[in-house]
Length: 554
Image (cartoon, rainbow, N blue to C red):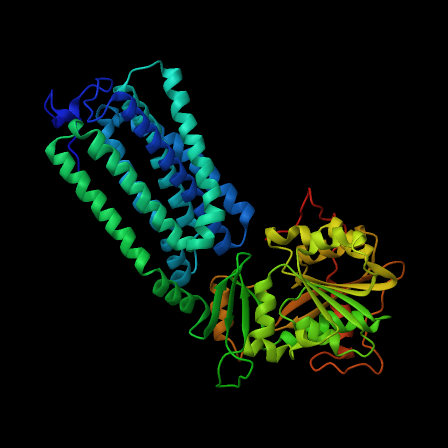
């Protein structure tokens, strides 16, 4: 630790008045430029830490709006607190700034790895995200008062001009950091390595500025302590960078179990495939597909889910032309292609990586019966909302059936795909007798989200037939729920999937096509129970969700 002010003899380097001219190894103009350059680098690093906490908090907790609000509000409060605390360090601004940057580099650089480790092995990160936001905010807030003191010691100027220069460098650095995070760090390094590299840069920039430029402001002991601290911080961060891959593999095994077969980041989302399509009582676990940590396909009951989604819509009228929104795994497509009379199927999937796995992964391609190889199938990698908006200008004919096989509405990132505007666009591409089938998320009990979807579809001008099918997984598990999913392959506890069948003009009937393909996991009795469950649990009076007023709860 650096000695306290009271114990430093008067006239020593560390007790220099806060505005006394600094003795520099370079001209004052060059020294001033170097301080502003350090402000630029530290601001870029600070914003990356902030965005990193928002990103990993949203990924692990699943509620981006709440996580963003919590991280930003806590950090802004903490920055004010840090500015107040920094007043005590102004008499030794150089040493204080170097120490602040070393701690900030260690805490900010390691934050993503620590959060992921706690999530993987202990199942929760809520309070830890707040803790990191508070500490990082205090350290970032302490920077500006100390830098203000340092730049005034190089060349005294009016306070307004010094503040303007510092804020200009700070804001430009924040711009660069904010752009580098999504466009450079995440694609090239990923969240964990990216944070560690930024922390290393932060430590080197802060330490080099003070230990070289303000060398004469420090006692011999202070120089030794600061040099040792910065070397240790850099060593820890560099060492952590070298073990990111084995650490990530171990964390994935802790989260998903030891049967992870595929784990990749596509730029749109993280995809993890686990298990096999062949499993018995004591055999390997069932196939699972996780998108950004949420279970989207479970091999134990995916057939029941996809048959419930597709077959009622295909049975209620013409079915020559079919549009599938989402469904890049090919499993809904498999059920569509079982129906005679289908001449054309268009699959609109935002993530080419999911489509690629649907075509090439040996387990997934067996499950979807290599549906993407059918000549009737056309695949388009596009956002479903944007694709529907562009449809009137595409020259395509309307569709007899539209199947919306999208992630749950409770995820903030997908709320617009369950908005009144979205369902209005989907209804526009239907033929007059066409039907829209919507996966509307978990529907256990009186589900607010599910019945908001149903209300929103009606608000878009469609007549609806809601139905709720029982299944053994909800299709949207995160955190500790994933562990329960892994360990319950013989469990018979039920969850419920919510679906909405809709059409223009006339409420579509719920049933199976006479003479059509016989479903393997759903029969007419199941659908009758599904309709009865929806009627029994119906929630009325819910306002529709719109782009400007999303009403789904995570």
